[in-house]
Length: 462
Image (cartoon, rainbow, N blue to C red):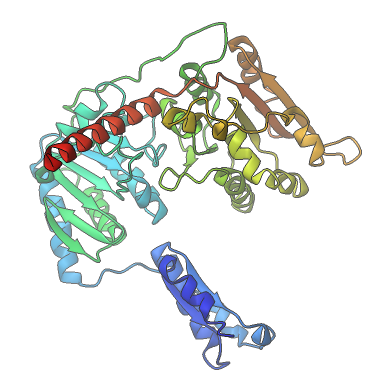
């Protein structure tokens, strides 16, 4: 049997690979692939045959750290790029920063924060990068999602004469259904594998060394670049969508209320579906880390991802809480990981959004169809007990259910619920036909585009 077939299977989704065959090269191959993984932030594949698992390697090389520094292919071209970016910053009268998720994924988080703090340029996040800019800062101007933005946000971005777009990910739900409208002549894109300056593209160049040099120069000579810069764009305050004091829970109320529940340094995971389209309405405290994945929208992702966040938070002694927000349908995909939380003593706060099935799929197609239903026989109030949080195990837990504004307010205002002394679960019931406004808006945009395309096709056929 050709065991190399497994490497071939992974070829399209990995950056690099190693097939460990020769004792003399194994250590070098492992190090090479680990470096490729760290630099590219992409998957890699190391094939370890069973008969080489016990091969002894020289441990002395473990004393020398691997060099994972990201370097661009040509220093002169990098100099040119840095110079162009700095010149554009000098010339711009109304610049803006648009920080996206790939800048975070590729290690640029602290540089983004520093760029915003040094310049005070109006700064914007996206649905995937929410929290990257301090949302309590005066230079935070909102979340840009094309035509699915709060009033005034898209106008502020699109009227800027220089938009520095860091780590762009141009997927449908991260761009309001591809409704961004930033002119190329006003746009600088710094990506993980390309740079584009006013339409001029530099393939193979990474934002990290470029952004580092730009930030260092601005920090060293703020007067030369007139920093911090006075803000000319009008700052639009996020509207209050629903200020109900009583009644049934609605999408328009829940997400902004959950935002007020969050604390500085919290790690927040929002599942695909209504949570993903609802959480952009919330205002985050400082240093909130936000994890979601609109690109593939694989349901159940956050339950396992939450375990990774819990492990990382423990190892790094992170001061904040870990907050998981997941729909009851998505939860059924990966619910077993909650048992792992309990096994290792982790204590996240879990919000289960129970809207009786796949709400996002109902909104897209077939609101009454059975394929958008899930089993409603699950009792989430007994879930933590089932997985091991019981008196006989000594594991403390608390589960609550909320169907009204008053009930949710009582839970979120309870200091015990917000503490970290036990795993907590709050089930939030909402109507199955109640959708976040951003989801409805994006579907409206998509349907209009499809209708227009169908009309053009009919004209061509005629």
